[in-house]
Length: 153
Image (cartoon, rainbow, N blue to C red; front, side, top):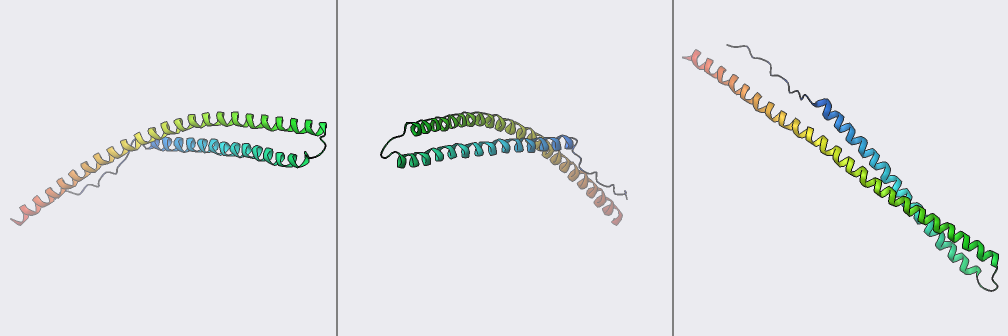
């Protein structure tokens, strides 16, 4: 009777590459998350400017009854201009952030595709290994069965 050989272990030769691709994908996810966080903060800043402007207008309406002060009107006008510039600058920055967000999403999608390619390749290698091991096991079982049959004759 033949001595049973230990089955060889599955070894994927691109395991380090797959690990690197996973790491790269996580890094791209973090970079995307940073931009998303920055976008949210910028949206909040714009909303704060708009709220500030609305609150300031309410206060101004109360003060504009009776005699008008030219200096006060000039100050209000300058402050409105400042708020408007802040809003416009914030919206431009938000547009740039969204553009960068689109770029980073594309990079993340590409990194994910690369990782999936190596995972799919790993699955194929594992399937091939499983088939080979099943055939080898079946062959060994057949040999054992044949040997036992011949001994019992």
